[in-house]
Length: 118
Image 1 (spheres, rainbow, N blue to C red):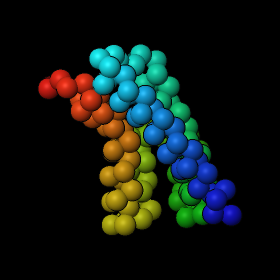
Image 2: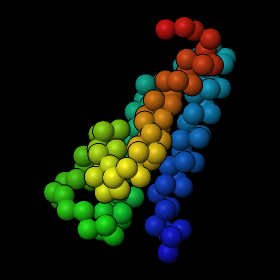
Image 3: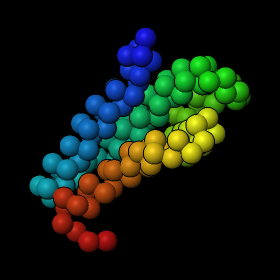
Image 4: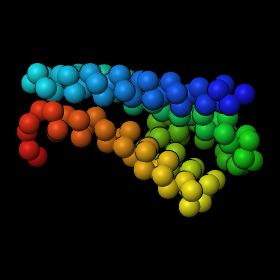
């Protein structure tokens, strides 16, 4: 049961590691990934988080509008931390920090591996 419940999170970790690895590889060679790949990453991350939030929301009796998953898909960097802090209180701070790392990770990887300073 727990493995099926957490499948979207595991898939998100795999997708994130793949994308961050590709970003690091491209930046270390002096290239940039296309804007479309970044858009795809954020859309896929939002979709996987929306799947997980929908499953988690049912188990926690969190009432929200029927279009809450839509907001998660397109605004996941803001909506998921809100959801985590509302449903978990102080114990939602660490997962919220991890969500911010997922959101800012590609930019940080590019800055680290490209050798450029902002």
